[in-house]
Image (cartoon, rainbow, N blue to C red):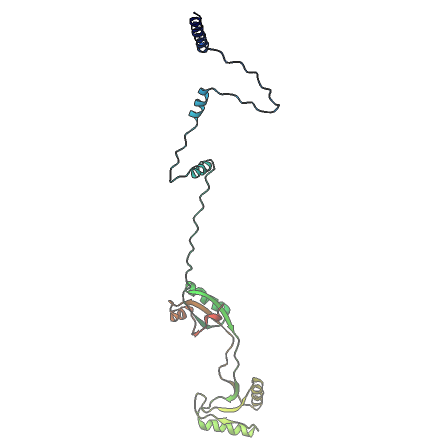
Length: 254
């Protein structure tokens, strides 16, 4: 009888414990912890709010083998930067045009600087550069005093007889050439000596003249010019109005 009672009591106890566990119970209230001043608190966000925030963030493209994650991060960082200005293409160097071959000549003589400059203006674009040049007068290498040629040899001899009677010596009758039958009365290195001889003859009543030996020329002007080798030097000479053309080194023409 006692054993039966214990069995019944034990069964009732087990049923009571099972009913206690099956009965829903509220979670025990936890006492709030003391917070330190200046420390932020952690707040729990509902699951629905977390899902909504996650939906608002754009998805990044999945990383592939050809595009590492680090590269994608750099690309995203660069996306916010302003686009750099495209650098202008470097200018291609222009090949220098080789200078045209040139020739140089002097055209002249001209009586004045103005005539030489007028010749340069006439030649115009055919000249690369030009410059007028003055040539100083050139003195003769010596001087002779002559009585003009007589009509015949006999007349020349008669003139010589009168010269001797006047006490003048150093004479000579020219036999040929442009001055044939003229009487030469001395040759001098400078013009002053020839002029003294001329004055003595004039005082004795003879008409004579001074002739220079070599080419004696007054001052003149020349046009030094450089021109392309395609131009004709003879054509430039004709158009310039000059009587002569002389070769010129281009290095001498500035």
